[in-house]
Image (tube, rainbow, N blue to C red):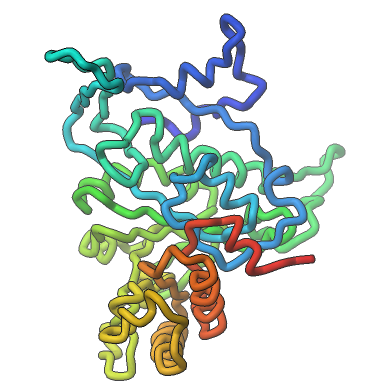
Length: 360
């Protein structure tokens, strides 16, 4: 498994060979080696987020972006989703990548997926060995947090620290360093096995005090600049058994209604930081009307009830599964969800969603 402490390649480390950037060859990496190359990146916190204000946007299927993670941060999205896969055995994929009129064809692409890696993508068919969780998210985030949290000391050996502040960890938004980032792992493979392989990748963030965590021994929540949430296939038992929880579970928002059992909701308030639900599951029989129409007042009141209940247990909320077209209806739904109290707006078109919150 790749060590997160391994120095990341920056743009200055990318050399040319035959007038082509080595980045091109890295992107074609087949997976047939003992270690995965580290993708270089040429982004800085200031370059991405200067004069950008954080917004309550959840970058849904973020890896679809041309520049995963970076596109989301550049418009101020505070929440980012990655679909992750882990395979217990290394395997190879073979396919023909160009059409042929020959009766017989042979594969001209062979890719290898290593059991020690965690991959990012929506569909197993379209995974690529270079697109690991480390490359697309963990390594750049770790580098950004390291930059935002430098060490300070007097050059003449003076007492104390020259840093003016409370000593808390900074986030990575230039204009709002107190704003945390929410990173989501949507488990597409078996929950427990995926979780066990994920945990070592998170250790550097833990060691540097960057993660929000919950301590069961004294029932205390400790805020950090990065909040990690698992959705999809949930390793409920493994996370529940941990004395200190550095990863949280996506709580079922549908549980948070007026007839809910308090003990059940208290349990989720200690396992989660966000409660999510599908629009279809929450509005029920009236869902079909939302496909072609704006939300009715009754639907908005119903949704607000879920949001308010989750907020009573100090959880943020997110709705998924809403329409993606037509645009005027998408915008209307997003604004209604925001005004009724949801905290993270699930968006596919980042630039369009950014325009819902103009700053000028």
